[in-house]
Length: 167
Ligand code: PNS
Image (cartoon, rainbow, N blue to C red; front, top):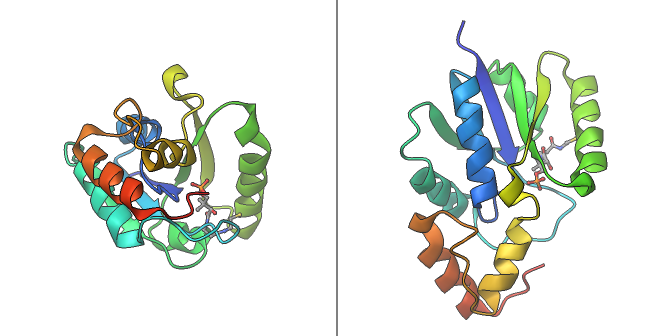
């Protein structure tokens, strides 16, 4: 049986921290679906779902068993539909824990057929987030230590010229 994992997130934009988790998940599962999802409690994303999809496609082009999709609905419905056995999430410093714990338990109640698997973030990505990247790019700072090289320019150009709200 092919073991499928879904790796959901906002990825607005994808960072080296995300890429690290996706890469490690690709070694553990036969197929990983990176699922661009909407966090209904957050403000409007800076990049459209299609833009985020294209950036992740560029950054994961070397990973044969990784595909990307866009979610419009509940995560568990998608997980059930593709018969995934796991929802993979990265866990950073303690601040992530309560929120992730809540989502994992809620998803388990909604659908018990998949496990949430947490991968501990690598030490160098411990405090990295899309919000931090956006903040740096907005003020014209160097985001190269934080995002995949192939999408660095696209992120930088887009965010430093837009003058949009980055929260
Ligand atoms: O990158 P994020 O913002 O931590 O990702 C959160 C996300 C998008 C994975 C979560 O909000 C989600 O799963 N959204 C899809 C809608 C859903 O199923 N919500 C219920 C989760 S308990």
